[in-house]
Image (cartoon, rainbow, N blue to C red; front, side):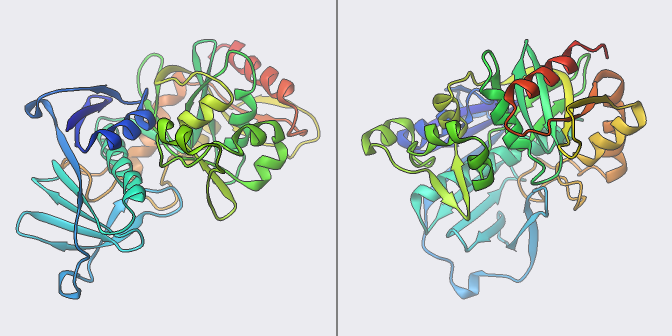
Length: 361
């Protein structure tokens, strides 16, 4: 069974059984539009196959950047085949067979079949990520909500409070969920923020600060199961890695509850700062805004902005080009440093966000 999933002009055909598609469609929408299409209308084809584990002779010592990540890219062993590349993730028992100049990827699984769903999702997201960058967009390390018809991006480094800030805002009436961890920003007047489906990791510190949200998510079940399977299994704790609950965007939106959005014009980019003693909104001048946006680029620390595997042949941009794109956003995007000393003060935070949206660009 093949279905098409489209994001920012790229269409990806996925071949899988009906149960896999039920899960994928739940996780990917509304960020990806879904339709049944003939294969000739598909730009990339991704499939999921059971395989035997690779033998020692099938492995090479060469590595490649398989997935772009903020802290550091995920490099995996790779070997060349007669038709392309075989990339091996031994941790989860996965081999990615990438062929036809990147237009066909088979996700071969010899490990946990349920876990393999996350790898199909990851490949789809990586193609979309790289495609958007090739078209001139930037991908920010940010969470995003939608209020008053505009997106507010909450940007900053790892552990800066992006997810906690987003969750607190989502408790407000009329606030919708757009994205967590990464957001595609497409240039325009105004620029557009596009959702990128990722797992929402809610650490123990955030759960302590947000007990009402934690209570609603404590028995939401395994994000690797689709909604019908979770309902059939009954209340279960979320999948946990280290100290973080791993929640899917649909689980989060159902529990709060709030709407899930695919795209919205950018109203503001905010950079949380809770160090001061009083609440504040500080509009950044052009130079500070450019520096802040550049610092919030996904993968900025490593300078490896794109996968070397899950791409359609475009040359990855250099750091200078990404900086230029950040500066090009400044005239059209209002940027603010904001602070709420009482991290539980949802109403105060909502007031600060409203102040950002009310100020002229």
